[in-house]
Image (cartoon, rainbow, N blue to C red; front, side, top):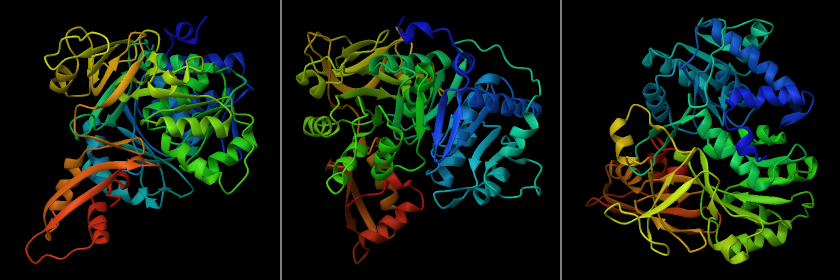
Length: 499
C-alpha cells in the first residue's frame, strides 16, 4: 500500500508514535555528533508536551518555533502535535520587526528560540518582544544561559527533565485539525499565515516519500530549514513516514552537505537549486564520494535543464523536480525517474495522487490542454485558508475549493505541468519570494534616494538575483554599500539587492 494511503488518517504525532512503537531503536534525527532514535525523539516529545501542558498550553494554542534545523525544532513539532497545539515556524533570520508582526498576528502564547542564533542575541530580542506582546506568555530557550531571573522564561532541558514520566491531558487530534501556521509573502508581498492541517502536511509528505520510494533504509540530506514548508513536510514528517534517517543542518552550505553525504552515506538529497549549484562549484576543487546517492530532489525554485543534467552527471542519480507551494503543504506535482529527460527536465511532472490541477483564463474559466494560464489546484494538501484573513482566503479559494496559485503554466496532453512564469510581481531568490515593491519602498525611504526600481536577473547560484536601479535626489550622494546597510535595518538578508 502506498504511504499516502497508509497514513491518510494519521495525525503528525501519530506518525512518530507509530514509528517509535515499530522501531524504537532506529535512528531518526542526526545533528553534529548526536543521534536521536525514533523512541528517544518520541520520549522527549512526550516530556516536552507534559511540561507545556503544566503551563496551560493545550489544544489550539500557538507555539512559535524560532530555531535553525536543530533536533529541538523537530521535538517541539511533535510535542505540540501531541497536545493539539498549532506550531508557527519562523525564520530566525527575520528582522525583529517581522518577528514581532508574526508573533502578534498568530497570537502565539509560547515561543521556542535559540539563545544565540546566527550571531543574534535572541534573549535581548525577546526582552523587548515580551513587553510588546502580552499574549506571548512563555519563552523556551535552547542554550546554556542561567535564566532564573524571569519566571516566564524556561530552559529547554529543564522542561524536558521536568516533564519526564508525567501524565498530561492530551487532545484527541483529528486529521483535519489545524497543525501549523506558516507565513508566506504569497502574491501580495505582505506576510500571510497559511493554515495547514495534519492531513494537509501528511498528504504532501507521504506523496513525496512515495515519489522517491523512501524507506527505512534511506538517509535524507539537504534539509537546512525546518521553518520552510518543504523542510517541515517532506523533510521532517516525510522522513518519519518512510522510517528513514534525517541529517539536520543548521547552516546552508555546500561543503557541509557534501561532508555529510560522504560520512553518513546519504541516499536521498533534497535541496533548492542554489544548493546543488554551489555543490557543483565546490566539487571542481575536491573529490567527493557520491556513490550512496540514489536520487536528488529539487524544490523551491526553477532548475534549468543544463543544471539538471550537470547534477545528474556529477551525482550519478536522477534529479526529480518538485513543484512546491506553502499553500499546498509542499508538493503539488513531481517528476519521476521513469519519465524521459524531455519531461523530467522541462516540466514539474504530473500532480501527485489526490491533487487536481486546472489552468484558468483571465476570466477564471478553465482552459483546454496546451493553453497558458494561471494554475489552480485542489486536493488533500491544499490549505484551509489564511489565518485571520477571510477576505484573502476568499480571493484565493474559489467556491469549488481550487486555489489560485499566481503561477502561469500549462498542462500538456500527457498531464505534465509546464511552468512559464508568475502572474504577479515576485522574484524567487534562492528559494525565497521577494516582492520588488517592499525593497523599493525601503530604498526610497533613504533621504538621498528619489526613485528606485528592483528587478530580477538570472543567476547561476540563486536562480534569480536582485538588481536595484536608484535615482538620487538632486545633489544627493549615496553608495551601493550604504544602501544595502540601510535596507538591512528593516529587511531580511535574502531581500537585500545583489547589485
